[in-house]
Structure formats: structure tokens, C-alpha cells
Image 1 (cartoon, rainbow, N blue to C red):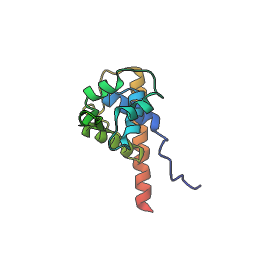
Image 2: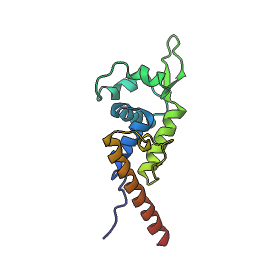
Image 3: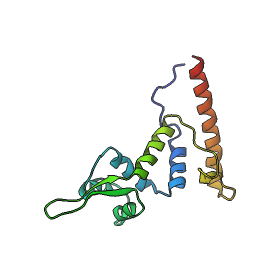
Image 4: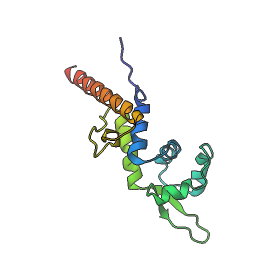
Length: 148
């Protein structure tokens, strides 16, 4: 049986849950960061274009800026609009998400993964078990590709 070459999203739900727990982001926040990741610089109007598709949160831009996900690239001056960019923190987080989608293992230590802390709720334990399964499959796939 031929394996699929673009099977990136098999564990998207698990990765998304981990990112939301690790970085304390909502799904809408992640969606807008994905959109802005390909934009080198953007104005508030470009942010608002995509924000209109998401659940209503009039403070999303300011909150993401205050939390360090968005940074001011060029301040507003008379006749020149302000430009923004994703911060180093945001680009590192996005790079990490893409690495996980491409088959990098999710860490299983309580220092880098809040789902592996001792006192977590039931959902976190279910996702923790799925992360273990996912990492096991990733290791097996990596070993198979080395043998070929």
C-alpha cells in the first residue's frame, strides 16, 4: 500500500491542543497568527480583514500586542500608518507548530509540556496519552525511512 506524502494534519488536533495549552492561546488567536505568519509586515487594516472571520473580540489586536505576539515595526506618524510584525516569540511558536506537523515529536516533560504535569484534568490526560502514541508512531516512521 502506498503511503501518503502529504499527511500533515493527521495529528493536527493533538498538536493544536498542545499549542493552546503550552502558549495559552485560543483557537481564534492561533488562526490569526497563522494568517499573519506569511505577512512580513501588516497594518491594523490587514489584521482586521482576517479578524472579521473569527469570533468577535474587539480587544484581540491589543491583547496579542500586549502579550508579545505582535510588535510595532513602524510607529504611526502623520500621513504614515503604523506597521506591525509578528514578534520573535510568535515566529518561534509558529516554526514549532510546523515542525510538529512535519513529524517532530512533542516534548513529554512537565517543564515543556503542561499536559504532563501531575495535576491535570481528564481531557489533558487523554491528550497526553495521544501524544505518547503520536511520538511512538513518529519514531517508528523515522526508523522505517532510515532502513529504506
